View (cartoon, rainbow, N blue to C red):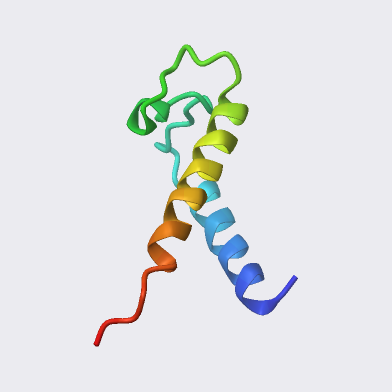
Length: 68
């Protein structure tokens, strides 16, 4: 584990152990912001497909020609 990752993990662990009002949500919560929903059959598969589509769509923007 590199220095930066270790530092982030320690920071998150410290926040998690000191804050007693942090709410834990199920994984499905928030998929509606990605045109999904809490009733998705397999949220992990939905998120994988969404990210694959986002990467594929971005590649078209990266291939744009140079501006003069």
